Image 1: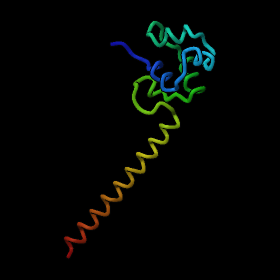
Image 2 (image 1 turned 135 degrees about the horizontal axis):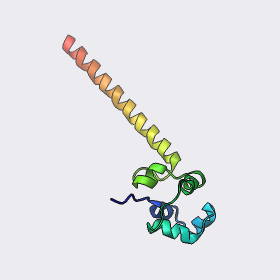
Image 3 (image 1 turned 135 degrees about the vertical axis):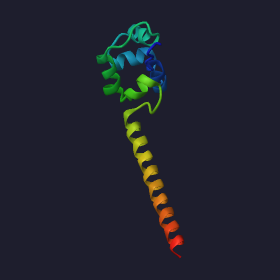
Image 4 (image 1 turned 45 degrees about the horizontal axis):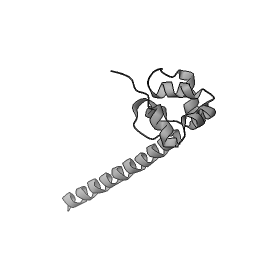
Length: 104
């Protein structure tokens, strides 16, 4: 099974052409085309450029799932944490109400 890296999808999400992206990453447009067509695998140095210069979420780049950007990852984690805490609070309230009902 081939290990896909989602560089094309990430670039398209940014609404950048390969040429525009090549300027940002300071690499040749043809190199980007080779990465996106799975002709060549990007080096760790290139992937770090995606992360540092474009705020790319490495989890997205390797899996194609999750937020595109690292700052969105934090937002998602914070939102999920709030949901979890609200659910825990509601469960505690339900448990307390259930105990009160049984004691009566």
